[in-house]
Image (cartoon, rainbow over all chains, first blue to last red):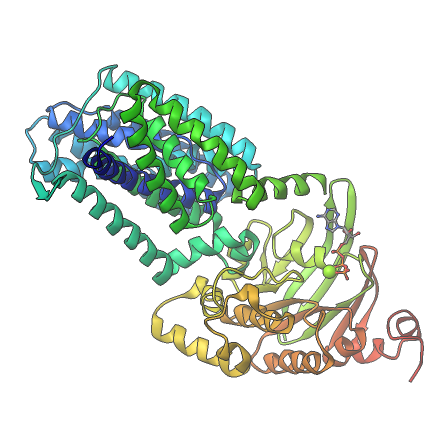
Length: 355
Length: 240
Ligand SMILES: Nc1ncnc2c1ncn2[C@@H]1O[C@H](COP(=O)(O)OP(=O)(O)OP(=O)(O)O)[C@@H](O)[C@H]1O
Ligand SMILES: [Mg+2]
């Protein structure tokens, strides 16, 4: 391997890694706030990329039907539970959040998809229609199980993943898609040629990570999210509703998923089930970071990206095998040196169960 | 004076074991009421049930409204606030963030928040010095002050205090009781659970004695403090 190739691979790895950073941040955020290991996160990323691809091809993305279905189920669940509790006065608000707000972007996308759309509009519509997916999944599948153990939540998450990827096959078919790059610019830096797309990816990833940091540090809802992650009982004692922080975490994560999908679309051919692998690799990054700290997560995700890029150079057929088997020594090493967040949570659950 | 809190026939069980069995108590607006009793009597459990943290049967009426339908968060919103025995601070966040989160339910703008923060800092100068320190690194006494400060940020009308003097040096214990007294002047009613029975009865207007999940004595605090049975079990045997 020459230096040029190595540099190219590193560059490639950093841009994929930068996308894994966003995905991993979303996964960690959801886990810390709700204890859900959100396996379908990668599927949401896949939906975002495929939605944009469909819009660019002038087709109606199946995401519209997904959002409408989820919104219908969530609305029925919410209205029934409010009516049962005798909180009928809160039904209009529930209708706004679970019916109107998700259906609005779905309807716009439905009608807009008949026309040729400029790139920025297609991108914006993709974000708008993907945004409601995760919060709706939270309302339907996870909020009713708020007190369940990490393991039960994980099993539900796996089930939701299979449902999501099955529906993706139905909506998008078995073919692969690649979206148009947002920029075709190239920059020559001596021996190195850097594509505008990879700069765009790294800059967006850094930007959104920084915005996330600002939300956590500066806003009350960000502090409430952190408080929920640090101490659930404490959070309830100051009046923070777990379902509010849960829904917020899923909403922010959905935004991260949409952005990741839009960024990865032009550099990889995505199929209905590709999202899962993206999610899994980001999850590996998050595990390397211990599932507890955001900066460590970002470093882990970039490492996975670089490693994957070298692995695919050595043997592209065995790329996934190499990436995931490399995890084993890392996990073994970690289990000797530190406790990860997951283990602690599971131990907590066990001690609660025994009590 | 009006009834602020009325608990009737409260039962709380952990699995099949009942920890609180048929407790009834009442407190008036502006009162300090204390519940004393031996370890494991069910005091902490009772407070958790009043707060809606544990499922219970029986009625809890606060400010004339039945609390059964409301979750913990709604009770906080209505002005009940618990400083739990286990403190439940946000250990990985700063002192200032812990206090700010105390005001979560009525946060309006930064300016009024800063004013409220200053009031708490004036009451607990130690916290002011340590506003950027992580809550998890505070000493036991400072944690207790932070837990109280965080509760005050919620502007409670009814404050439930679970062993506020637990593990504190005598000087700080006196300070804490002084603060409890001064809160009454602000119009906060206080339900005080204490091991330190003498100090609690000296502070309170009315007292209840809880033993294995049931109320065994009750009466004006000044009476209980001279009650031979209470003295024998909780005040160290000597009639003064
Ligand atoms: N999570 C739990 N599961 C099972 N039993 C519990 C649980 N929490 C408390 N108990 C039991 O309920 C009883 C009452 O406990 P509680 O903590 O309310 O007592 P307490 O009066 O606050 O005691 P202390 O003065 O020691 O704080 C005890 O026998 C305790 O062992
Ligand atoms: Mg106790």
